[in-house]
Image (tube, chains in turn cyan, orange, yellow, blue):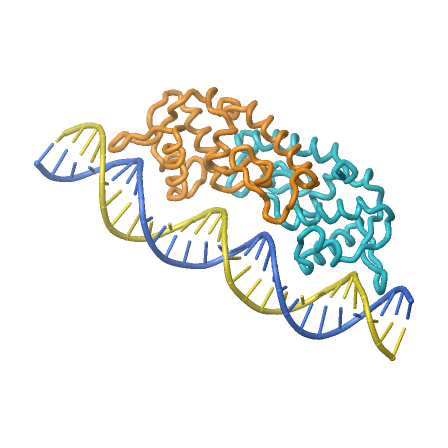
Amino acid sequence: MLSKKTKYGLKALTYLASQKENTPVQIAEIAENENISQKFLESILLSLRKTGFLGSKKGKGGGYYLIKDPKEILMTDVMRILEGPIAMVPCVSLNFYEKCDDCPNESICSVNKLMLKVRDANLEVYRNNTLADLIM
Amino acid sequence: MLSKKTKYGLKALTYLASQKENTPVQIAEIAENENISQKFLESILLSLRKTGFLGSKKGKGGGYYLIKDPKEILMTDVMRILEGPIAMVPCVSLNFYEKCDDCPNESICSVNKLMLKVRDANLEVYRNNTLADLIM
DNA sequence: AACTACCCCATCAACTTAATAGAGTAAACA
DNA sequence: TGTTTACTCTATTAAGTTGATGGGGTAGTT
């Protein structure tokens, strides 16, 4: 299941990318338009700023704005920041690899075998979609 | 993240499919060989029996066994039983559709748009893999 | 200097997961 | 017919995560 964090994050990014001018947009405006808890959205936008997707401006007329061109923002990167690993098990994760504690041998593990294919299918989608592709 | 329930269920199914003869295998044997909590595995196998994947035999020499040919057991069906919806959001789910409470219009929702593609990619994998494909 | 909006901390209820225990029931075999 | 074996069911529990909220502080703009 997709977390609300990711859902809200994607909606906020899309909202920002849909602006005609790339001027700062207030949290309150995004939250209201997208039906998001303002406080929760604050923390999400903050993490997107810290990871280099957004810039922020304080004071009157402040808010958040996109730093990069939406075409340059890959879903792989966004998903990893918001949702975490793309793989469904750590033993097939590219960026968050970990050995399964209960599995003695990955090379003969049926779960590993299936989840590798699932990971690749998901990566294919996320790599081929940018923020620009989400705008209606 | 893949739940342990699904992970254990897949391992148990694979274990059964790997047997030379399709005679009943005791829960304890599967649990020991696959490093699974026996009690937890019990409930998983029970649900797989109730949904028509496994048969069971009581008494001495009893246990669980596959009802169908591994080639006929699609991952789509197994995943839906064990893990639940394949879609990451209910509004793109084929078998568990639900409208998102916070989203006024699916047709202009960026999350919906992206998750449709993800769902299709995952379905493609699950539809093209059977239990037979997981055996090493 | 005042206002605005970002920023951070702590708290909290609700839910889910994974594991475990204990008792009950049905089938097989001597 | 009775005992063994193993499946079946209910209930409980600890731990972790999620999503939401409140309060207060800080920094930049006008």
